[in-house]
Image (cartoon, rainbow over all chains, first blue to last red; front, side, top):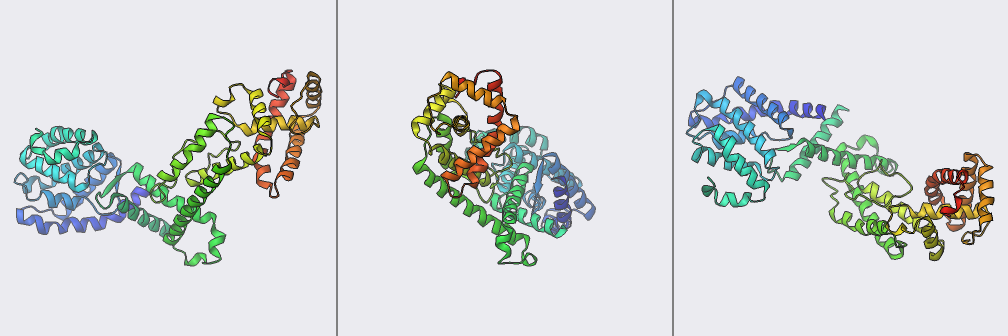
Length: 155
Length: 278
């Protein structure tokens, strides 16, 4: 299994870097850019997080989706852009597991973004430790759909 | 080899996309292992039937994908065939009032409802609580269910070659509570049948007197375990050949119980308790 993971990761690495750098075309409109070194670091960090969470990506990477979802946020600045992307990836995979894969990528990202903007005001610790914790609990108990409809009432 | 690994990984990727409906870019290790296992299971299934396919197609022209797809079709066919076998067997199946056998047999349709050939063909879903004479641990998925059904079929052929009264009485002599026990019925009846044959009684003889037990005891003690096993095997083989034209499978199946029966008979003779179960 370990060898299988390594093979998959090696194959994806090249494509992923290109895709990530391609996202600069969108994020630059909001003053955010990743250089090649930063992009490589963020991807490497994602692979570590995947291992930590015992998950594997077979095809597309989640990173471009995270960039697309969050690049227009008022709480992300160029100085901390790469670091925030790393943390967002970490939170994303952690809650993929915590929600027992009951949520699609888009659903989880949509919820993360709305909470990040409207409730946490850019505070990632609050997003991870409070908002998503409650959300994952509700999803596990089978009430995830209700939260999507009434997410304003949760907190 | 490396090319094969690449192709298998490509298949795993596609299967993962199908599984997640492209709604998730990642899956857990457990899920990845399950999907990889699903592909390898189908490939293995195809490899087992290699000769059948090689007539049509040479190995050089078969890609891993082709082999997988052929294996997948084979698993589907095998599942359909097993379902037909179950339905056919259900018409003449007898549980001899044993709860474990009845409930295990009745649970098998649940397998056909829940079996997932595409994403989890290596899962046999059921516990198959009623013990058969052969160990089926090395099989999984439809292979285990198929093998289990075959074991039950052979058992039924053997058991139904005797009158129901003889079978029930043999089981009751084994234990008054046999209806609630997780024991193999075929092995119990086979043992009684063998004792009858060792004494040169008719196969369904039920008139056992104390002197008969003594005589049987002397006979068993006079033989080495291997000799006893061989004698039992020969008796069983002769009977199976009379019973079925194609008796090879039945002989193979019943033979799985002979060694245990020989040990039991030896022990019972040595401790003077032959009459307890026979």
